[in-house]
Amino acid sequence: MPPAIIAPSILAGDFANMERDARRAEQGGGDWLHCDVMDGHFVPNITFGPPMIEALHRSTKLPLDVHLMIERPDQYAEQFAKAGAHVQTIHVEALGNKKAGTEGRAVFEKKNLAAISETLTRIRQLGCLAGLAVNPLTPVNAVEPFLESVDLILIMSVWPGFGGQKFMGEVVPKIREARELVKRSGRAIHVAVDGGIDNSSGKPCGDAGADVFVAGSSLYRHSDLGKAIEELRRTISA
Image 1 (cartoon, rainbow, N blue to C red):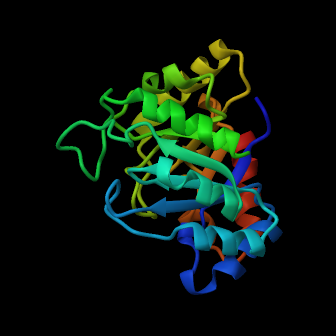
Image 2 (image 1 turned 90 degrees about the horizontal axis):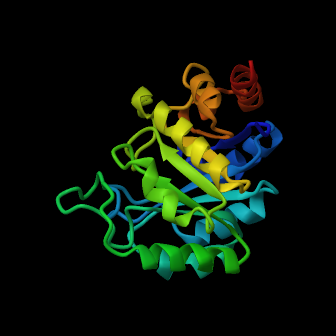
Image 3 (image 1 turned 180 degrees about the vertical axis):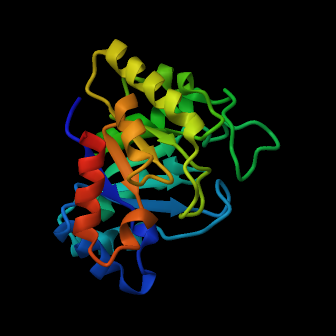
């Protein structure tokens, strides 16, 4: 397994002091800065768009891990790339690929795989790593058709939309399944986990095969963010 990548989530920071909290993540030893973009449609919350990513890019040298919780990532991929995104992760349930009646808690239903494939390809053409996220009730095999086009598989361990949620332990087998898919693909694809990650949940996720750990509240609630990152990293590798 590659070394753990710790990606503090700026969603848990102070929106009045985003520059400061981006620098805290960098100075504290974070590897990536995770940025949750929400449109109020794919998830029931609204955060920020390309201008904030551009501002964060000026504030820190950390790679920006941009999680697009939006219905139409295809319409914004170029803007986020120009703003400074290093990773752009879209949802397999986006672009019309969700079951009817699952608005706000989208579950995958195969309807327009071409749109997903085209968007992933475009993200990579723009010079970013391309990620594909799956919500808690979406099976991991939904990403299998796209293994040649992705650099990261993101397993959501909460329903996306809000920080501070409790980790859903039932997703751990999905992390293991995603790692097996990566092994069979023969490609160097990251397996990330996002939602409720702390010193108790990080270890089982790492043991299951995750190598990217998105953590928000469990890190930013500490006055010493560096110490919190160090403790999480140590717990995962123990």
